[in-house]
Amino acid sequence: MPPKPKTDAERQQLRTLIIDAARELFVTKGVEAVTMREIAKRIDYSATSIYLHFSDKEAVLRAICETDFLALATSLKDIFQIENPVERLLVLGRGYAEFALSHPNHYRLMFMAQHTPRHPKDLALQQNNPEQDAYYQLKMVVNDVFLAGAFRPELTDADLIAQTIWAATHGVCSLEINMAQDTWVNWVDISARLQLMQTVLMRGLLKEPN
Amino acid sequence: MPPKPKTDAERQQLRTLIIDAARELFVTKGVEAVTMREIAKRIDYSATSIYLHFSDKEAVLRAICETDFLALATSLKDIFQIENPVERLLVLGRGYAEFALSHPNHYRLMFMAQHTPRHPKDLALQQNNPEQDAYYQLKMVVNDVFLAGAFRPELTDADLIAQTIWAATHGVCSLEINMAQDTWVNWVDISARLQLMQTVLMRGLLKEPN
DNA sequence: TTGTTAAATTAACGACGTTCAGTTATTTGA
DNA sequence: TCAAATAACTGAACGTCGTTAATTTAACAA
Image (tube, rainbow over all chains, first blue to last red; front, top):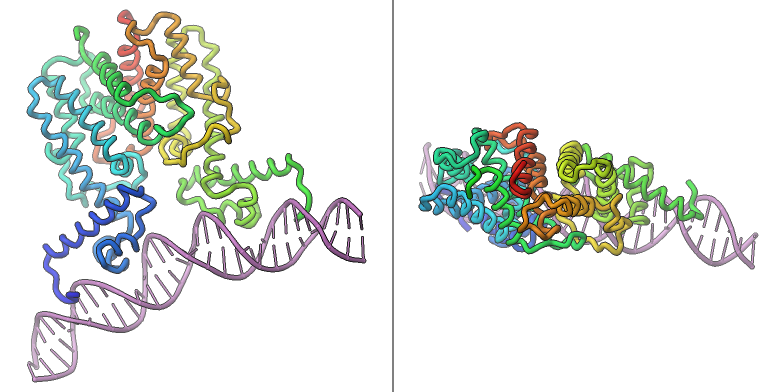
């Protein structure tokens, strides 16, 4: 093994090697199953080596999280090809839900697990970059709908509208991820729940006709 | 210390002693910070003694959870004094949110943390008991609104309606609990978010006038 | 009095995240 | 050419965790 010099590119490469190994583990086995020793074994390093690249275990999870935020925004950016702003909003919601439900462990880590508050400063992710910031994507679409004059006249706060849409969609997805196997509740089909939530959102936020 | 006989009442008393100590700890410090040894120290027992009453740590958390489900249902049952079904639904939603936001750690354990699927069989809680089952409370109110003919005519599945209302409210609350300190998003005041979500729900679910 | 038994404790196990002391093998500069 | 310096990496170890095993304690039954 090479004990001496390491270019920045090589260090970055090892970083992503660690992140990928950790992701693969916790995607299949859940967050708790990720141990530093197991991550290390996957990439044929000692557990200690991880600490040369990440301050602690949570830093590894945060790094996974960050690449997943990027993945979410990337998976959503195609919506901007859709011309009708309202239709764009609907497809954004469906895309968000699809991401959440097909990557439940990622989604759980991103939006359902408790983090130490992340400082935007030490994130590589760029806030308000329409290719990297999914919340900004949502806000942009909300703003387009607003400019089209489609929202009810009393709704003028783009953040409030965006956060309401987000909360509604997140509510459906997170309940599904967390409680779908709970037999206490007689769960209706998830796609019906998503469909109705979208309908309710549109009827509640948009002007009367339609 | 008394090492010999123990009536059922005494055993139950010790059970709740453990639960209460554990709850007090994890409410202030979060779930992960609660250790069996710390719970035991609170009640002047050894850590191993807890295992005489609970199979493992998760069983303790599940027991806390169960008493909290009961607490939620208890805190909501006053709504049935309200005559107007739609108003009852609104107050139910506000009561739910108030519970969630004033007991965030309880709420997190109840609806945001991953459990091994609970079998209703080994729960002391009675399903479909209007004093113990908050979901049943919601469904009853939904049914009352339905019987009053206030829902849009195409909405006929009480579970679907209830789960949509729940998901929307849960979405607002869980995002607040988990992400309020995240500076990535310019969060609007929580009461404004709750208010708009209620308005959107009513406009989306109820018949046109009002 | 003496077993018997339930309640409780101490000791210990294996695994975890993490730290430390050391070992490599390459580069440097004399 | 060859020691000194240094970056990459590792094995051993620390403290703590959830949990189990072995043991002690004290009340009852005979």
